Image (spheres, rainbow, N blue to C red):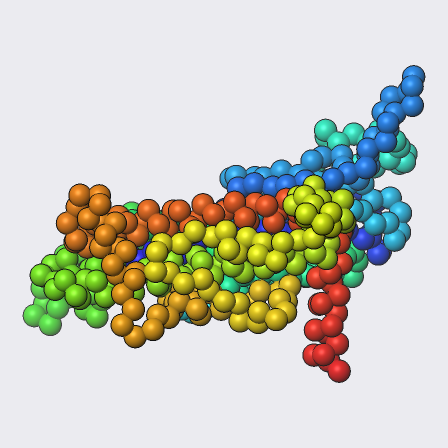
Amino acid sequence: MSLCTVVEIALQFESFRNIDLFHQGLYHLKTRIYRDDESRALAVPHSHLKGPTLVTEPVKGKAPRVDHHNLIPAHLNEELYTFSTRSFLIRYCEEEVELGDVGQFRLELGPSELERRQPLLLEVELMFADLTQPSGENLGDQPDVESAEFRCVSTQVLRLRGVERGLHDFCPVVFDECHFCLLNLAVHSAVLDLRFRLRPKQLAAAKPKVAGPAPRAGAKGEEDSEGGESRGGDVGLPAVVKHSKKSLNNDGSEDHDQERPPSSWQAAPPPALSMAEALFAEELNRPVEHSRLMQLAEGLYRRHIGVLSSSYVQQAAWFKLICERCLTPLQREALFGRTEDGDVVVPSDLGIDVLTLPKGMLMPQLPNPSGVRASGSTAGISSLKPAAGFECTTGERVLQESILARIAESGESFTPHSVARLLAYDLNAVSCQILELWHQALNVVAFCYREIASMLRTQWEERIIDQWS
């Protein structure tokens, strides 16, 4: 198979507002992300960030006061592939809770998924635990959270479109009228890496909320007629044609019990065992001319390095935008220092000119260099086509000569395997730079979650007004 695109999605939980919840008690939000297709492949939660909180010093001689809006910290569930925010106590109508939690998910998309551009599904569950005492007493200042048993009381499923192209959008989540509350949520995404997988692991969603569930093993009608042994089918595998042991042919003879695939089914080709086989499938089995291999190598570089470079430039533009609009002068000074004139400004080339590319690769240009929108859904990042700004003029051979010279310096001959190894090295080098910039942006998002959510909310309201006016 080809290279998989690694996409990271960051869910920024800004605040939770109780409008008219039916019960007082302990609440938190549990989320997971999966693909909107037959596979229901789950995104893997791998980390989370916590925003700053105001901590008051306890009075001397008194125990520290319990923060009712942070009784249980945010956490990941590796078995269910979910991220849960902090647990908070809701006691009053119109009560608002500042969360400031950021959950990080990662998902690998193959070329076929990018070609179909199917959206992802974000499942948000409102979890509730009743802390009321059996005698009907109030919750008190010291609620017993150790014995809390959470259950899902409401669920909302949202579609995320364009995560592979970079996304920075505000998304309000309103639950049903029996549990009337509002969650202010912002979604951020970025392409971090391109990776070769021999056989990617598919993690299916356990209980999809939108489409029907996958076939269950042992369902009614799937038992053998003889032994009663249940046979559950694997999702994605071709069905087999079953012949009964007692079926008769035209000549009166009996068929033996057997299973065979349909006549129209053809076996899939064996998966590639190396990156060179995935990139040069046909060229490995036959001699390739030197000029032809040079053209293939240049095309692979412009196609794959171009994707990562476009993602880097887009994230750098987003990082610069939030630093200019959401940070105070003192915060910007702590990040970038002062200029020679003593002013505190965000550098105009923040992150973009720092990117190190192989010789001959051009720096990509943003589609709208005069003004960068906060939402990156129109940035146009795809692993199927080179990004804008990477087309070379006719006759330019700088990149080809650079590839050939670097392979010669390593002492290898110019073959598809040496090109694949050099491309893997350069992909890792660019990916490390994207990851560093992405974590810098996430640190700012976690620190200034109120300001960033307010900025994205304003843009969301403007789009809603334009859409319905």
